[in-house]
Image (cartoon, rainbow, N blue to C red; front, side):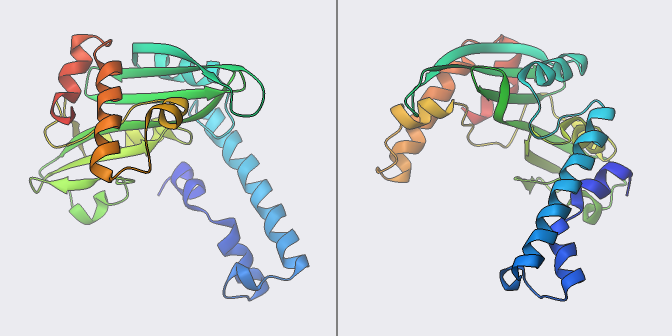
Amino acid sequence: MDKIDKILMYDPIAEAEKITGKEHWSNFSESDNMLALLMNMQHANKKADILKNSKDTYFSMSWDYLIDILQKNEFELGTEWWFVDDQWGSINNERAVIYYRKDGIVVYAESYNNGTSVNGGKCYYELEMKEDVNKSEVFCLIHTGCWYDENKIENELDIREGLIHELNKATRYGSFIKKWKNRSHLWILDYMESKNRINHNDEYEVWSKQYQEITKEHISKCPKELQDIVECSL
């Protein structure tokens, strides 16, 4: 396990439980909580420094930093749009983008604070395993995904922390699939579209279709190369 894997997997709350001898953080005293808070802050700062020095993504990064990281790792712009966030009594103009890489990776990201910071985002890919890979080792790759056809996985990553590290790690186990074969749905829409255009009180089948229709609108504005990657999911 390398340095970045170790720091991404480290759990400061679990470590505080060991130090205090408490089985669960819900049993912490006020002083225990202060210790856990301090350990969490120190860990977050150390993790951000290591990821920045590795030229990778980290929590609280700026929007421009994310775009620079994507472009320096051969991602190309699929489409971008601005949207208005008027939820909290003020008007913020925010950004959303879809980037892709020709080997079959797709990234969605959206901003907050008037387009200056990263609010969130996802990375999607499918991977075909090398013949000599031990499947038990590959579970470290799967964040939100599944196996299919015995030797392939589909996966979804949070882009805000260690994205490039996770993608590089995936290549040690296999090759990205340039045209997805298994993903049955893809939801790409900004948080104001989710709030204003989706009726979450409806049954799953109804609002799932609404998500899919908005996603298709955005994908239709992307280059054909990207559309071909995600075709099976639309």
